[in-house]
Length: 176
Image (cartoon, rainbow, N blue to C red; front, side, top):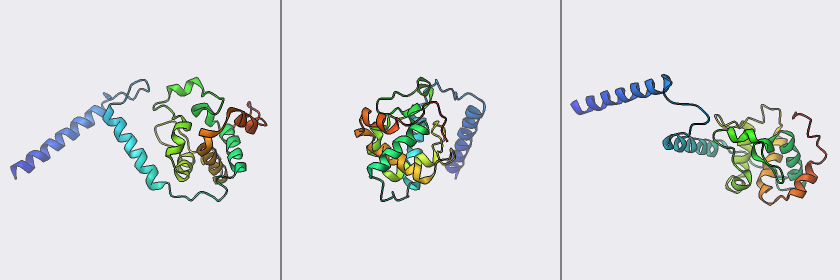
């Protein structure tokens, strides 16, 4: 019984110390400060588990259709995705390097994610990363699926194709 009481007291003391550390402002939330490895590990695990649990939508039959991919390239450009993630022949904007964590290079991660996972992330965004919800930005599910289709094909899209597909867009016009 004494051992259980000691464990309980120790747990309370650790909880109070952690609360004082975090709520007392000792933990730096600066974007220039690297997270401790345990924080990075925990956030990565939580993000992955959440995406895996919630990404249950079925891709439309037109997902691999070239017209859908091209439409996705236009939506990708219109909604400003290249600003943080870059695009074929387009470097990401310098300010995106200040985001913490860094935005992923979608050419590298596209193969690791299913269409449903891409759709869910694009639609809902990811807290504490700078990735917005494109649904809240005004994108329709059809547009979001087309962006997901484009991202899935991104590793094989040439600079020339992307330029051709997005040439009709006015770069000065704001997203929807």
